[in-house]
Image (cartoon, rainbow, N blue to C red; front, side):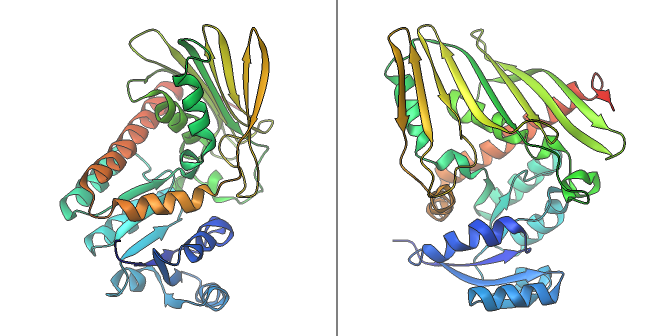
Length: 329
């Protein structure tokens, strides 16, 4: 078995406290929580006391710590370029929250550095490690819906609270680097890398100063399309649907099921409707296990690098196609 990693948390984001640190602490044979760092020293000290780890006064000190092997970075996307690159240069494996890069050029630079240093660089789309998606893939492989004809996915939610960093473009805000990433990653994760962005629309809110909802259309060379919808100003949606020749598969809680929640997969054909209840699963734990397994595994690292580059390139294409034709409110 590979060695236990001492992992630090660079930034006191809510997702770290709610989900990621508990998952780290659960995996006692794989990880040791080395410490937390924040620009708010009092907050970092409070977290360190709560989770029984060291406290670091500032991000740079945690990155420089010689006894820390890896870093989980849940900072806003606009801060990733500096801190991910500094972490990689310090020889740390990095698991960063999505979107890992504010632009495609930054993603290319990060991946090149990780590859040169032979380090793991992983983007935090945890949902893809949930076992419900294996059920979907098995149903499709079995021919349950015939050949695929279309894919649709949406991830959206009502307006965020005023002052949320996701409304701040300087910090990498906007729906494109947040909610849009989920249905986009689902497309490539479920259907393959050959799907390319063909069209997009984005709505820019002049008051909030960023994009708040949009859509995109992707297609593969065989005429199969994928329509995506995403938003910060929408009715809640968290789903995808595969439509085939003879039926369809629907995942209703595709991206954010709690560890104790049993998501339902619906198979609908001419013979009727079958609902499959997937077992509860902790995709944060499974994502961390993948991160750990990738250390020293070149093929796994290469796959993670490809995911990052394809995701970032596709988001850049959606932005390029969507903004010139998008509306402003």
